[in-house]
Image (cartoon, rainbow over all chains, first blue to last red; front, side, top):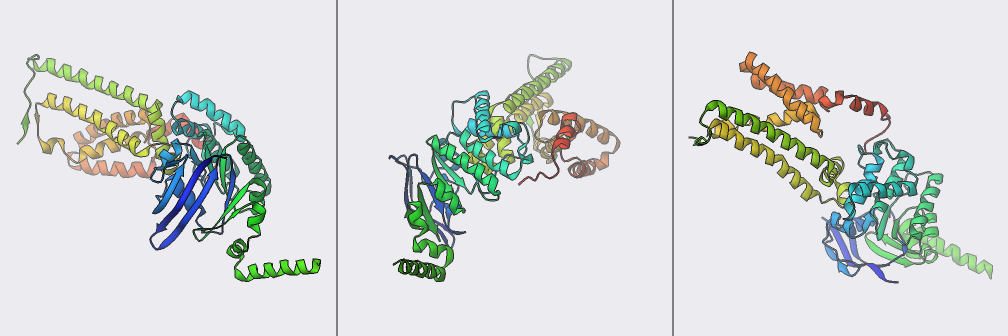
Length: 257
Length: 185
């Protein structure tokens, strides 16, 4: 598996707050990696630093072996990094189609406006927003806006896609739909980093999970292995519950004997 | 203290010169319109509309917003500068107090507001209507001229924030179609 993205001791400080501390991580092409962690762990900051919204205060971001630490957002967009926003960011007065067309047009050179439009229509078809193509983006429901965000990132023909809580605020039926979409995207070979709070979703979709806590990487590995990691349980539930869980496991083992 | 601009040697008669300037000014207006409409339909115009709606989202899809905004700023200056050149040729004499009046910075904004921001047709309509109003006020209420201008801006911002173009059928139609519940977050 070739390495697509590599983070070397990446750090970001906001004044007195160390939002990211020496995060080192490697993501291979075609992987679907889950990025989890409690609120405020630095997940979104990590995406922001990689895509250039914030610049790193230390460390390096290597993409296909190239140092992109100091790239601006539009530059990372043009080399194949796309992301959705946790709080959706459409162009409210443009139509759904124009929203996606803009993404197709500006992310890569070589498209005329008309070609970008045709490509955008394909993406709308893919996410199921074709019937809404000519409505203003502001008139969509939240679930549809999340799908619009997806269509926009897909129109950028990304190599590496960051999905920042695409399921937050959706009901379970909508989550099912979104997940089948993500699986379809993964099947096309796009590398995905999925930031998600719903553990069930992460475990079923991701091949590997990375856990952030207080800006540090505390665990990494197979979904099953990570979810049972005492450090992860502690980060989410606190020391007492983590101990209780351990005791519970021990007792269970004893009773099995 | 001003700057004298020598009269062109080709045109000896005042009338001939007036006519020339008249046609040159109109040509400039038409060239400006063509360029503006061209930009509106181009990638640059599309990018600027995206930036206008949500700059960080525009950055994220690969729009170089710094470059685009600089271009917009540059284009907004080019045509005014050209008009200034023609104007100077017409009056033969320019002096800072005449041509650096603060009102010259305010008036184009009022014209755009009057017509409707972000619309070529609006800017055109706004400019003509504004000039009409100005001539009327200038002739009848000389002392209140600036005051009336200020009042006009306030009234426009309060009651007609989208300008004259929002009276057009398409503008009204759009507003009716949009559901009330749609937020703009």
